[in-house]
Length: 224
Image (cartoon, rainbow, N blue to C red; front, top):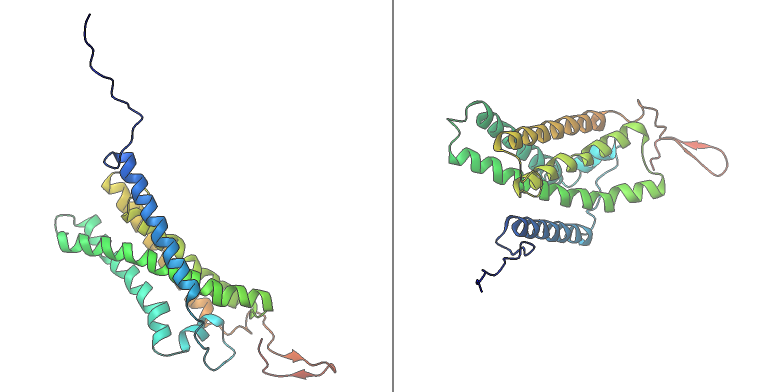
């Protein structure tokens, strides 16, 4: 009788296997994302500043100076531009892209997506839903400004998924960098569209700031 070696179960996937590591990464990313969302939902709404009749995008940045400007504009834009510059160095001068440049590109990209996810959830809860329920949008320019600003979560969070290898784990480095650069470009486009629409006087796009009283008269300058 010939002794045979015991068969190794190919279906067993431990934490050390590629599929096991991928599952662990996905679980960690989901846990961190959920935690960020919960914290954002628990944060109190910051008091709004003086209503100047502008878009809510501009009102958000103008209120609570300089904190709103730093939190909602400076941090995500600086992160995106940092990633963009380091990405160009890595793509076009890989021999000059040292460890510091690559680390900066990776960790800033990783941070930006999770950071903006918190911004997205916070503004969805404290701005988008209340404005939609109350009919407080100030015309198309207002919707475009806020909508395109929040769309920034797609490319920024996509970058974080790339950096954690939840997205594109099987891609080669060059392909991953190209997708990474595409995400950066998309964010800069939507951010600038939001900025342009946000700076526009909402009355130019058709918003009427007058408020009709119960007796049929109109009061100028009343905003929703």
